[in-house]
Image (cartoon, rainbow, N blue to C red; front, side):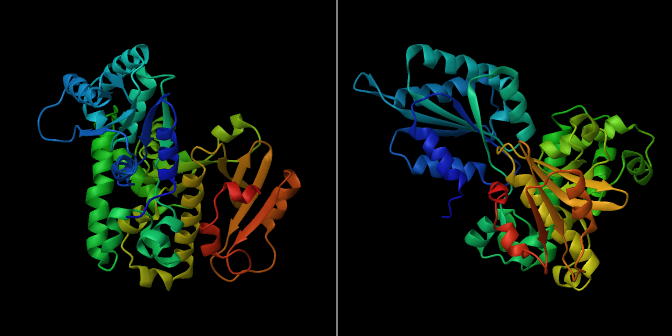
Length: 397
């Protein structure tokens, strides 16, 4: 079975002396459970896996029971030895983080070398529990949407297929039947994420507005839209603060983000109109009514998917890497993506069709800011395939 690069990160952490709880955090259907099980199979120490997803009602006592099973496995001939406990779907137990904190601290005091991995399908709920009670006791291992390199190696997707179908491993075998694939993405991923991970966890006064905002983001992925224009499009009398909050919830759930305009000053960046980017192009494909082959015949439309694929690659690739992602515009001049790391800047322009030799956006941006690298993704620059196989860190080398 294919092992993602993040598998090596987890294996390395488990080989170290017990220091922190390892939290696998990321959107639904990105392979967190598979990753944890691969790690269990790849180590020789005693281990115990338990999931709160089973039908029987679970409470905090269930966590204590599973923890005790793992503690027993760490005992050998009266001596303690290294063991591993994996708790899956942990967010389904109310108050889980307080119980985990108490048990972890007991093991620390008693010098019990029990490693612990926690994970769950709801990134929002897991993050909330970690920050609420477990400060200083955990490390997050981001499990992001799958990259082109991963989908190519694991499932043989070519660059056009990845641009349209995105990076959901569980749906990869369905792409030859686009109607079935779209239904799976809409029902098993989009609806489940919105209804279970966002609406059940957070107070959302206008759930219909949040759903319409997600659809609007899919329709306008790759485009800048002011909050006032959003309100007009959504036909809602709400306020821009509510929209910004809902957009942040959609980002935390791994669905949609709004990039800020690069200004060199964070105050001005926060006040800018956001540029929508879906965090997996499967979301815009399943939310629309286009077949891949039909879409490729319409250059302007296909260009939106290409730009969104670049945006997905960057937005997922920067997670955990101390890199920020923006766009830039001024007087009808625009740079599609701006990467910022410390004081270094990379400017990226995406052109999927034939282009003229000048790129006024990057030229204007370069006059205002010191740019380390300027990149054109498209026929006259780096190919889309080559770009998608490049990590954001490599763009700074």
